[in-house]
Amino acid sequence: SQTIHQWPATLVQPVGSPLSLECTVEGTSNPNLYWYRQAAGRGLQLLFYSVGIGQISSEVPQNLSASRPQDRQFILSSKKLLLSDSGFYLCAWSVSRDQPQHFGDGTRLSIL
Amino acid sequence: QKEVEQDPGPLSVPEGAIVSLNCTYSNSAFQYFMWYRQYSRKGPELLMYTYSSGNKEDGRFTAQVDKSSKYISLFIRDSQPSDSATYLCAMKRSGTASKLTFGTGTRLQVTL
Image (cartoon, rainbow over the protein chains, first blue to last red):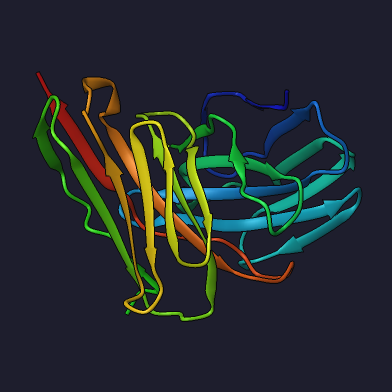
């Protein structure tokens, strides 16, 4: 069966520091991968998605970037964090864009 | 106006009650409809996935789609305290380029 792992579960970072969140999927090949941010009362906002290695589409211009160095690895990064980057970050995968997405347990990011 | 509207609740029901959770939407092009359950500090978990109109049943859960009214529902029979969570609806158009649009979630509390 397929599983998705995200780490860390919780992260506290100072303003201006870099960020790297990692997501890996097991049990499937060539998944579609997604990064979301969830804010209270605002639902899930799609940040990035990837249909293959090195292929990244950005949905919202922002202080973040994503990379997919391996088939089942998706990384969310920032060079300099802003206070507004605080939130709950979720990684998801799907077999294809028309199939439902399955989520990891997220990273709660607090910026001080 | 948001594309997907969902009452945030909280909705409090006694154990054993039938729960009805709903979403309305404005985009008639939505073809795929999903319900996710999200426990506190966890990622969303896929409960139901339906295509176009009609009903789908899985155990105590029934998903209903009425495209003519742009209205979807999730019914939970014999509700249990373990059903206490936030329920998110999500939907998308057909085609690989379209993305999921989420409701903001309804918080459900099932009391003993």
